[in-house]
Image (cartoon, rainbow, N blue to C red; front, side, top):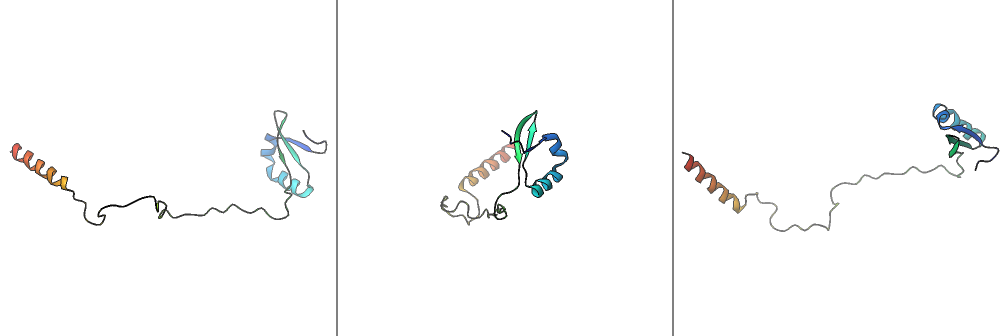
Length: 101
């Protein structure tokens, strides 16, 4: 799986010498095979592209308008929220108070 010219290094050694190994790969252009328990698990190799990789741009979206076209507002949403059932509750409370006294 590895070529004869590839250098191998354990995952533990990679953690300890990561910065130096990155510079070595960029400078020499040679691959380094990373092993764990004597099995190859990854390859550290120089970037082959002709231009710099583009960073993934994360766009922030406003939460306003997310549900546009998915909801329908019915009735009056501007008037104070005091429903007809509130009168029934008030009447019930007045009745209890009068019974307690």
